[in-house]
Image 1: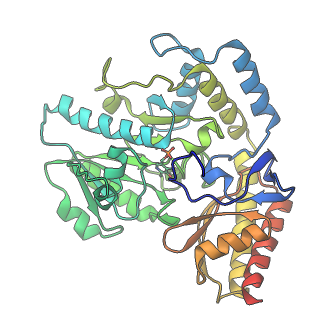
Image 2: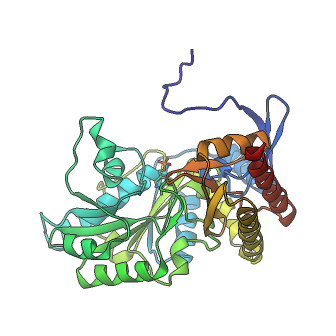
Length: 389
Ligand SMILES: *Cc1c(COP(=O)(O)O)cnc(C)c1O
């Protein structure tokens, strides 16, 4: 009997420590981690620099309330704004909180700007995942709320990629559109660049705010700091979390001055959000990611991984249907059951994560070397072979 509320199906693996891209289990095995704690441990495990920065800060000050100045948070906000479209950052502790903040900020904007009581509807897409608190669940679609006897108004959940339907559903109540530029849980489904541009146009034409949920695809995962940078267009609001703390709980909602300035004292808050310890870690993550060579290396290794996976696909067309995604956020669409694939990969000492649409997510730490990348490709090849025997 476990005393943990049974909300996760857990494998029997327990890890004692990690080093770079590897995790070591209590039964003495070494695993190459192509899951990264679901896109969290982007700088791998036991990073010396991150450890040093965390320990330094932990010996000075862990927490003070947001009713005081927090220079580490101030610095993190400035740096995130400097590398993005944003002028303001709000800090929290998780992805779902970042999404909740985005919903409040978007609705507040129209409440204040137009004194509008009706412009509160948010359009969301099928297959999306925005978190597990009530508002974020509602953004993920009404069926996610049904089993909790809950309905939430103000969300319209529509088919992914249906442009005509989208145009039809927009009316004077529409406040925002929220979308993951590259769906994670939904099965590594990328919004084509043309569609992102189209969304921006629709939003501009109809006075609608565009929210990008980059909790999974942001902070380097796709080979740029933020996934939407591939499209050349920008959102009004963006959520990030997973990788920004490399495992230390930290999330943020970023927004423009125009939109963010409608939030005033008391309109939102978080006890822990952006405390000195979390902010110090966030800054240390940026120190590494903003180094000149970081994205060049990432570019090389992600191309190597993609072409390697494609050649495995060609050799095992009965096991793998296709490979998709961008950067180090890749999906293997399986012809066998994705859960079986994850299990067989684990037997080959490779960790991966399942997603919808029978996808196995391949999301190694972004510091992956070419050698480790090739080792992973061979493990995936061996995983395919294991289905034949
Ligand atoms: C993981 C995720 C969330 C939720 O993050 P939590 O930290 O688990 O609350 C929200 N949106 C996307 C796109 C995610 O991948």
